[in-house]
Structures are given as C-alpha cells and as structure tokens.
Length: 389
Image (cartoon, rainbow, N blue to C red; front, side, top):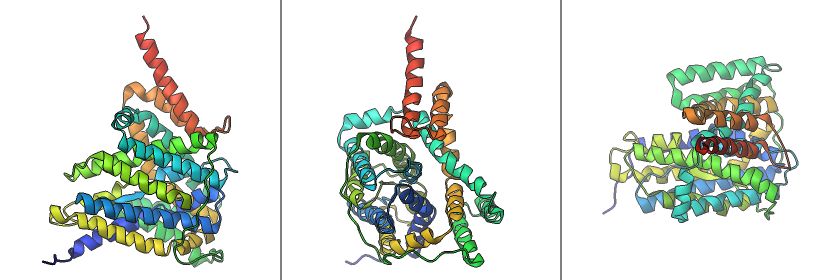
C-alpha cells in the first residue's frame, strides 16, 4: 500500500526551516572562506559541500531512526574561522576541519569520551563563543560610520521583526540588507565562476598550531553551541534518540565533506524546532518525513550554491559585515547568558570571554584557543585553592 504524501504543512515547515538555516548565515560562511583565503571556486565548493552534507546525513538519519533529524552548518564555527589570522593556508584549514570531524566521531563512538565531553564547563565554552562573536556584532555599528542608512534599516527590521515575526527576523534582515545595495546600484559585477553546484577537492595539510588554534575550538563550539542544543530540541519534541549515532553521523558527514571545504555539519536547533513539532506533521510517527523533505530542499540549495556565493561576494564589504553582525546577535545573547549562568564559574568565564574577544595571537595560536586555556586554568586554580587547607 502506497502511503499518502506528507501534508502541505510538512512541506512548508521543511522549506521555512531550510531557508532560515541557509539564508540567515550564508553571508557569514562567505566571510569565513574569504578570511581563509579561499578562491571563488573553493568558496562555492565549501557551501555546496555543506549543503550536501546536511542533506545526505539528515535524510539517512531521519529514515533509519524514523525521527525528524534536522542538520545545519556550524554558525559559531564559521564565526571562529572568520577571525582566523590572515595567511592561514586553505589546505591547513581543511586539515583542521578534518580533525574537528574526527573528534566528533570519537565522541559518538567512544562512550568514555562522551562522558568526558559532558563535563566540559558550558560556561567556559560559551564564553569563548561569546568572545568570538562579539567583534562581529560590534562590526555592525562600525559600519554605521560609513553607511548609517544601511545599519538603521537592518536594525529597525531586526528589532521590529523580533517582536512580531521572530521566526523570520533574520530572513527579513537578509532581504533588506541585500536589497538596499541593489536599489542604490552598489552591487558590483558578479565575480566569474560556476553557476551550479560543484565540489573542488583540496589536499589537506596538518599543521599542529592550526589544529590547536582552529580544529579544537571548532570542535568545542560546535559541540556546545550546536550539537547539544540540537539534542535538547529533539527531547523537547519528545524524541529521545541515543546521542551516539547522531554525533557519529554528523561527524562522518563533516569528515567526508571537509576536503571540499565544509567546516562542520551538526544538529540544528532553530530549524529543528520548526520541523519537529506538531505543526510540522500531525502524526508523530510520520514526522520523520519532514526531515527528508528538509534534506531535499538542501539538495536544491546545493545545486545553486556557487551562484549564491558569487552574489554575496559582489555585495559591498560593509553589507556583509552588517548582515553578519545582525545575524549573530541572538547567538551572542545566548552564549553570554550561558557563560554567566553558573555564579561560581563567572570569573573563569569573563577571563575566557575577554581573551577570546581580544584578538590575541601568541605562538601562532589564536585568541579562541588562549581563551579556553586561560578559562580552564582559572577553574583549575579555583579548585586547587578550595582543596588547600
């Protein structure tokens, strides 16, 4: 017997979830690939690979587990990459992506590592993320010095939409921010490149300083800010899958797609909330089909990813900075709240936050790494002093 097609609301939920997941932060992905010195072709390949990883792993996990598994790319991870010191070779960044993916796979495969990860203080990891995000959000207001109309427009839309249409706030900001330079004639000619999705492989290199400065922080922020909240969203929707296959699945997808430029595939939170509730499908046992539909929309996005990347590369840098700053405000608020939630760990959190936000580079290692080092050191000092007589 042939089952009926998913209801219209399932298609709508999957479409909205995919558009929010892609559109809200694609400008940040472009900015991250630029910071790492990727070519136009490599940037297009990175977005294509991310979309295909999200689609492939999400569809397989949804079908096998009969649960709507909704994936996304790591937004905080992309923010981390965009703060990377200039001159980082693209091949070395690819190597760091692969190490971060292997760490995620190990987390899913080795139970002891999973238990160890649960003991990572969320305050320190979130404070590092907040420090990474802060310069981008401040960048929004720096743009106001040269383009006050742009900043005023995106801020008004963002604040109004957060009150009336919070789900679509970032999409509306994207439409206004990208539409304004078109109306003003500020859009440059699209750089030459492919129109349709393609994958350009890069042979990875493994440099210890870049693995420590990018790979390890990328793994941690993706775990704390994406994968763990994604599991919470599933549990809120009354789905309780074992974390191991999910972490192993997203880690494997990240590893396979890393040579093509994908920095991290992970569990989604906002998009997952759209696709896992009763509004997505009335039958809980058939709601997994929404995850498959969501994956299908990402295949379509992958098909035109290079064209979309070229469009964003043609936008003025001030527009990309403004869109990125606005898009990261909700993530900044959430990470600050989490970092300060545990009163006893606030000193360590603020040290981590300030170090990560400082832009410090020492021994070829970036501020995110040193933020973690100093944060964990602060916690260790406090614990040692408590044990001493």
